[in-house]
Length: 251
Length: 354
Ligand SMILES: Nc1ncnc2c1ncn2[C@@H]1O[C@H](COP(=O)(O)OP(=O)(O)OP(=O)(O)O)[C@@H](O)[C@H]1O
Ligand SMILES: [Mg+2]
Image (cartoon, rainbow over all chains, first blue to last red; front, top):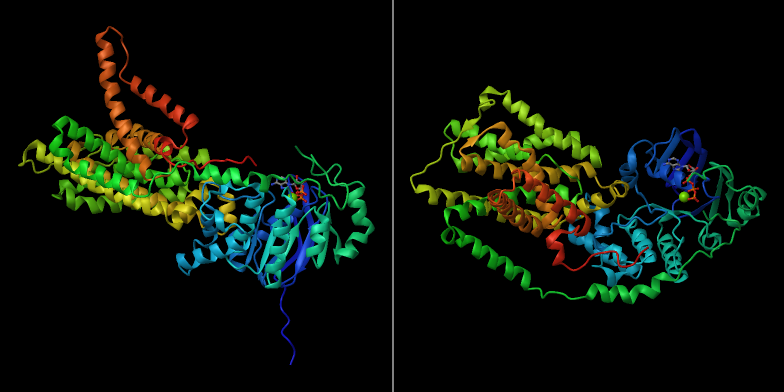
């Protein structure tokens, strides 16, 4: 008997997206295996956030396909992606500031069956998971920037997704919060949740990831283990050399 | 713009998280009112309201009834407008739908109580296509479209002979008890609706629908990304609001005795409702209750005050009261965004700048 081969949670095939003539993502392909942690690096403006937006359904790709758990979801909007089991966080935390931490976690489960009490218990567990239990009834605007990032992280976990896309989870947070974030991502990962993490904090990322994809000018220029990718001359050049000169530096 | 130059750059952190936490906690713990005060005050106010018709003269009772009518419609408006952040300048459409439904049925012999349910149904049904068209629009587009709807409704009714056209319709009520008893009937009908509307508003505020609406107001795109069916959520808020406005409209049809297109679908009524919520407090069930009293009483006072000024030889047009209300709207929008209700509540603000 052969063991069942688990299909990739996310399968991206030659997707592309341009904005007013500027090709932000240009034929990117990769797959995310269940329970893996994939790092996505690249200079500013290289198309990392746009790639997440394409996977997540914020944008529809101009060509190519996005599959979540085997189902094609491109062009079907964010809700289809969420329902297929992929959630996300944003580069700048987008918590709902006038509602409490607990209520923030209730927003993703609005249309889910199971009853309010069940979801509330789940939300309380998750707040405790990242050390925000005491802030259950605090409006999110009164949380610090780092706490908001943690809140946004657990908000992406409420629905028990197969994979979470995280855009810059370590940016602009205190090292102690960063450590909590890193440890909790690792905890969830051992329970089977896959992650795609965009980050410029390479050392933090390397400790988490089994695989790193490096993008430059909308294309994948390296894909492999952290050690392989860091040793790749094109990656070193992208970071130290030309960088994003002439691209993406609008405004 | 900072740009990465090395693979190991982690120097952009600021130690803000731990240092400011105690300050946040103490600010949040500030002066708090004991738990029983809220319910006790509600009961006391309700008791006073129940005895209002005995205590007030006919003029005062009419004013109180107007306050209640504004409160019902404003409570309905506040769900989508206050919690959801969608400025609906077309509340008069649903109100007018209730007015005309009740009046048209009255011509067939239906009374106030019998006409109430159909008025609610018609107002809600009209809100469905309105919602399907407008709720995909954002911001200014939504506001402008709803404003236009009021004029559209006027035109439709003016050209509908079976609704009395431009001449309008008369309603008749049983007046055997005398004017006082009749006034008290309208008062209690609207008081009942206010209690119902406030209860609905309270429940929505504390339900997942309320959270979803507030999420939409703050960041609709993020709500979509989290899987919220935003159009459906906004639609529910709009329908509940339309139903309440329709109910208030049904009572108004009998209260005025004569309905015509410009009176039933009145843009300045739509504006007043927005004003009531802004002044009273957006997105809280108490706000419209406070705001309705303030706006209606102020409007009446201004009207007599302007007449008094005329006696001193100052020739001020009667519409000047709208200028005062307009200024008030701007003042609240700029300096007291949470309205009068917000002044009594625990501050929920951005304590830590991010
Ligand atoms: N909504 C948009 N409209 C127009 N241009 C956009 C939009 N989103 C992204 N871009 C452009 O696409 C390019 C890629 O941007 P993207 O945000 O994906 O980069 P990134 O790799 O996430 O960069 P960073 O590290 O700075 O976050 C940039 O040139 C950017 O200006
Ligand atoms: Mg980015």
